[in-house]
Length: 154
Image (cartoon, rainbow, N blue to C red; front, side):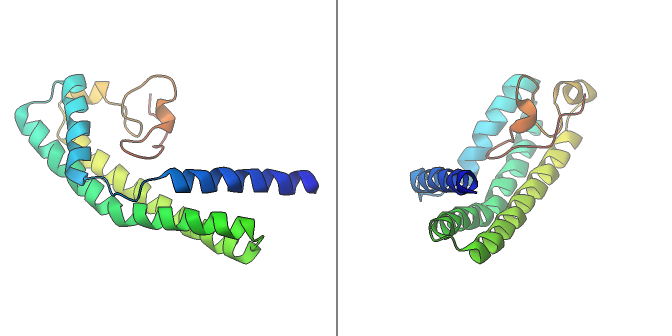
């Protein structure tokens, strides 16, 4: 029982440290989208029309994610506080909140990837791994901006 408590305490301390390490500045959605489109253009040889469409798609995604990201930062801070106080009721409700916000982010990301995938040529689609961006070690755990994506389809 003591080991379980120490494990939760350690996770809580790490989580609190991560929450404190996050900056309160909200990243600019347009800048985030532009970095992604630059990378995708280089990897997939996007046309200027495709790059423009991709910029619109990913800017809208990043903008839609802003409130969920703010909510996640707040929920993770609340979770760290609840862990320190051994407030199991708050831990449960906050964990549910975090799960809901992560689901919103996953759905927004998947919808943006679906819209992006439709603008690609068949050759570009073959190079692009849905859910994780591009292949390689750990790609199934990386998302476009800020979180893990769905497992890659091979």
